[in-house]
Image (tube, rainbow, N blue to C red; front, side, top):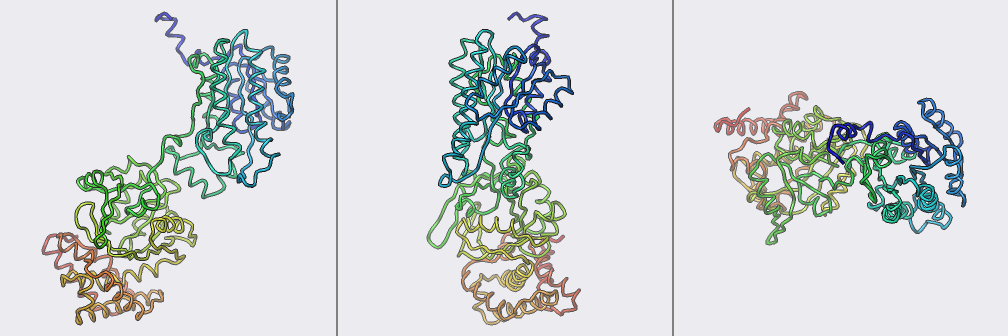
Amino acid sequence: MTFDAESIRALAPGRAFALDGKVAVVTGAAGGIGRWLAAGLGAAGARVLVTDYVPEALDEVRSALAGAAVEIAAFECDLTDEDAPERIVAAALDLLGRVDVLVNCAAVNRRLPILEMDRETYDWIMRIDLRLPYFLSQTAARAMTDHGGAIVNISSLNFQYGLEHISVYGPAKAGLSQLTRVMALEWAEHGIRANAIAPGYMDTPLAVPIWADPDVARWIMNRVPLQRAGKPAELVATCQLLASDAGSFITGQTIVVDGGFMAGGRWFTPDAYRFVQGGHETVLVDVIESLVDTVNTSGVTIVRGDEETATRVPATTDPSSVGAVDAVVFFTKCYHTAAAAQSAHPLVGAQTIVASLQNGWGNGDVLAAEYDPAQIVLGVTYNSGLVLGPGRVRHPADAATTLGPFAGDSTGDAERLAQAIRDGGLEAEVAAQVRPEIWKKIVLNAATLPTAALAGMNAGALTEHPEMHELVSETAREAVAVARSLGYHIDPKERVDSIHALLERAAATKGSMLQDFEAGRRTEIDVINGAVVRAAAESGVDVPLNRALVALVKGWEAMRGLGD
């Protein structure tokens, strides 16, 4: 080819993709994808024979294409008939004079477990999805050998991606892609190219049951980087490419058009190594670059007694490098929640669970200012950790986590997140009304965190010391009284007994506020005892111990320039 003005003008898409004078045959043309491919080939200048077994739908397609000035012929045919390939090609030759392009789009499926698949259904799927394109392509190729042509087979992601309950459809599509390669090898000498298109999850009538199932739709959307279903019209350009001279050096290929589904997996994003142990893809997100570098180099090490477990977990400071995920769980300090919620937008898609397992009261409201309240899950966890160094944490013992919806009473998202936690070997339960559980944790934190921090005591020492034991108990009773005034039925004796039992189990563990004191950090007193004091003021409950603890901790912060 000479590099001159004429060859450059020939590169214009309108000329390269033109199908003027060509005849295209499209099977399954009454379907959601087939009709658009037929329309696209007609729009590129081809005369088109559309065929299917549904006369009403086929007539609708014929009428629509004719209205767009496409030269169109329709041939109704039961595609399962033994002589369907010969009849379809004969119709094209009789009505339009030749065959240049064949698009094998017809396909059927019935999802059944292998143990329930019967021979009749197996034969039906294989006959339409693999046998028909085999013999129809054979017949069409015989009509193309004197002038060449193009065959475009419509495959599926399932030619490569296995899923349960498609034990016939999947192998049929895999076979179709392999057949495409063999066609390309055998028919190249006749000027016949053969390629396949593997669409992703599309918005078609056949896919309505898929999108109607919220669990399935969530599963798909969290694996499609473009975060939407494909449109049949978005397959047209690829089909035009493969059918026209624009694709003259492309043959034997299966081209995936899937919004990125097959590009790879996305990271499930909680801030806990247990999700990794449970088999969930996980990435940690933090703003401290040195911590992220350490985690990426050495992983996360959990120390339990004399045993250490190192787990490799990817980490990043850039949420946009991860993309939308199944769930985002916030563990930041409460005063960082708003900033963290804003920066996490690249992680959150329409189906993403947005969860908080943070200390204190009010984190859900902060998240709801950024995201749909229906996506938000609140929870409390009694798992504690002592930071021993970057990426290194002491975890004394497994403890319970409770999750529930922030808005409404649907517990589906909470249950999915709880199951992920269980997968990692931890206890997790779901409560339709989670706020009383959050207040139970507030009672615990209000009674133990500031007292331990101000006295410099670990958990075991706090409950063993008689005067501190009583201070913890009285502070807890005040907080319970406030919770009860808000309508949360919390048993004060149960709370006090549970708190001291937990302190005994935690033993040498240091509370988070004591760790803040030792690190010279601002504490979360505002959303713990501060929340108790504010609610008490509204309810008319006297909480002198909680007020005193707030004053003491705020005073400590003020002396170190850590205030608001």
